[in-house]
Length: 236
Image (cartoon, rainbow, N blue to C red; front, side, top):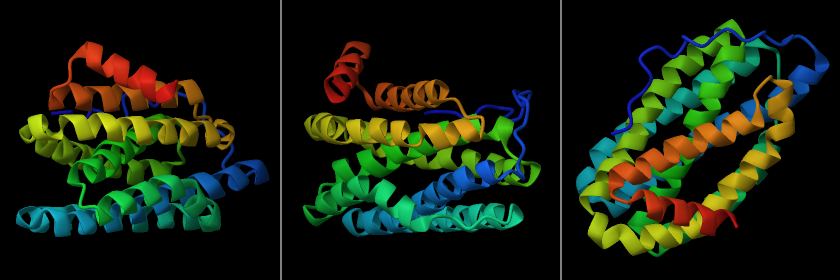
């Protein structure tokens, strides 16, 4: 299982940006909206997964409630900085992954739904929160530190289910990776300019995401060679 770092604040040494500038608040309005929308999507996705895995509906409902709590925490972060989240931007940002999840859900493709939500989106969130914590304002840092510990629980849920069902899931996982990993790469590129204003480095974001995602694939059962091939094919 993927473990959360023992001390999430150990590397909080970076120079902090000026949280009061118009440029910071403008970029924050989109970054904050993305995390709010991401947590809302996660809530809905876990509830939907409960209809596909009824024997796990209770646990999936618990994970969903955690995501709603996270959403409210990030809404409080925006209010703390007197920023209005750009939710229209965030919905557009998530639309491709949202659409792919809904298509998989309608086809009852549990594996693809888990790959999108419990692997890709959770790894995306964990990487973003790791890079954000050292440069966050004090209020948002406290909120985000609590959230990122929870996200490892969600990533580990997907890992555990897919690992237990690896033989039956293998080919669908490969296809889901091919369809959805490029979308996340594009999302990371799309957010790079705003992230830079918040002192979040794009290369660090991408590296942290790939580490979290590839560690999950390793735990599930893929070999290092297979993971490299999956990454190259999907990002080519």
